[in-house]
Image: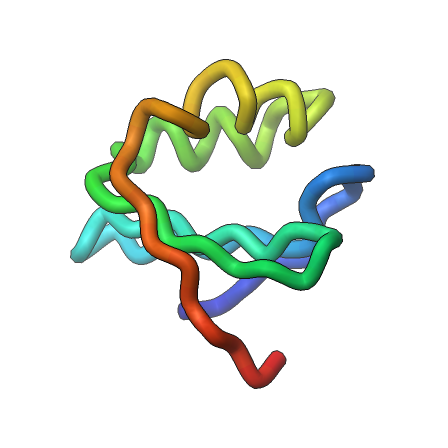
Length: 73
């Protein structure tokens, strides 16, 4: 999954797989999470959001199942 570095105080990078509807988020803390079943529209809205952190809190966190992954990035 290709990750895009974003301008955010909370998030370092974001990637999306439209086939599996998985959103990968690398937080500034260094932790990486994959959120399942995220519609492409939600990913597009996240990328367009003025505040990516606020959007994550309002629209993604506690709404989608997720797992933490280990990354070599």
